[in-house]
Image: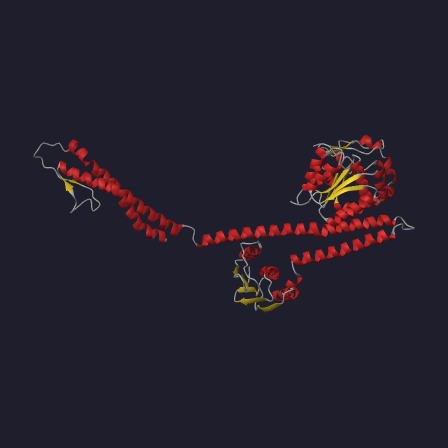
Length: 324
Length: 228
């Protein structure tokens, strides 16, 4: 609608540009056809011929010529119009193009669609990568441990024989011990894997889950949670994994003595921050951890803000909507 | 039999257990390595009777063990290749057995728990025979279920065929049939069944595995023809 309104004056100027081309050509041709058509006997009264100028075509004030030398003046005016025409045309068409881009081009809605497409692609990639990592962990962890365990038990069973004396009881004991060790390790691995998929404590809410994270941390953690309205499970999960990763980062890279986790619900936004008094210099460009978190937050229109000057302190804030 | 063995497996724990199992059965482990490249080098150095290789190993954790195994089958045709994996993929079976099933085997890793059977499979492959996991055979049978030849078989015949396809000897098949309680139950419930006139047999597992039935009768180890 705005474009249609703006188009009216622009269209008139465009028409003017076209008239410059046509009028210029016509004026330029005056001397040619003057000789051909104006060869009447002397004394005949002829009405003067109008000359198209940029300032007006007809009526009072129109420039008219009645003699052959006059046509040269008309031709000169035509040449000047033709020279000016490309400039005017270009100026007016680029103004029109600018209006089209500005008023008809991708607006805020289109930008939103584009952003959603990006974040959806990220979400799909993220879940595919997650499944691959899970399979890899199972394959290289619990599965191979259980296969080894079964092999140890198989060997022990073979050494036990079919009854009576056991010739090599020590070897059997050693194999059974190894199998037992393997079973415990496989259990431990499965437990941590299952917890990594979905920490059961998260079912009780983010406050409990964060408290459990804080309790597990080797570096002392000061926790402050005030979430009056419970976020949706998806948001809680994202917030939890962000907190877990940021906590692990702080413990691993920053040499911090103290870490502070704050989670606050403000109207329809959940603000989660992890701050430490460590070395600082956290950079999403190095390593995939922080950029991965930013991507994960972006999937639900969240944001990750990093304040980490070299020398510290570091404060990383994750802003998430309460419902996804 | 006293075979010389090279092991390739990236899990150190499983590798050590496997080496122990193999040595307990009187074979010699010449080398135990952790990736495909090291496997090829070890085979070139030791010229073993058999290679036991994990399919998925570093660096890509996809199928480097299988690729190394195929390379070994090309370069050292007298070295048997037994690949182990945590999954059975029909595609891998086809690649491994393409053209020739002699001296090749494909077993699930967990089969090592049946120590005696695993040792048997190892010796068979080292001697130029075949060892296919029941899971592999099951997939092949399922894949060719629509084929007429298979439909003509009784359940028991199909069971025997599956055991044959695993690469077992006649003695091994008899052993498995006797041990199988399901077979015993069937045999007791229908004692006359074995005396029924034999049904006509079409080509079994067309397109995939064609067991040569006569070999099964004369007591030699059964052979498989893999039709590529």
